[in-house]
Amino acid sequence: MKKLLYFFGLLLCCGFSLNAQDIPFIKSDQVTAWKNDSSQTVYVLNFWATWCAPCVAELPDFEKLNQTYSDKGVRVILVSTDFRRDVDKRLKPFVERKKLECQVAFMDERTPNNWIDLVSPEWSGAIPATLIVSKGRGFEQFFEKQMHYEELEEAVKAALNN
Image (tube, rainbow, N blue to C red; front, side, top):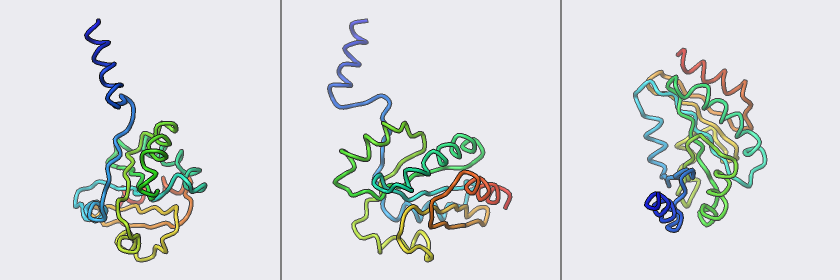
């Protein structure tokens, strides 16, 4: 028992959290990889930030979508566009406080204009924005607005039936 307590104490002492989500830093080539994945996976890529009220308001709908469709070949990925300096002090605590189950990734690109068109040529750069894509199913749909569960589910069902 002492060894077990020591182990957990060591983890906490070293800054590890057993329930904190790992937030990978991604580059635009990761978005390209998701878009070009020839499998049957449907990717739901939501671009958001902690400081964006409509973005935060729609997160429960993405969480519900993830819970409902994760076992049906759907991957919901919340791509944070927060400032790099805010990842540790704002983004990570936010994800933990909200108990987000969806995969969260941080877009680690300094110039948004270099990757926005990769997501969609329709995108002005405003958030929230969502791309639902499956190259293997021949499906791609882009939304530049706050999404609600019904709209998300309709688009995901369309992708799965494509």
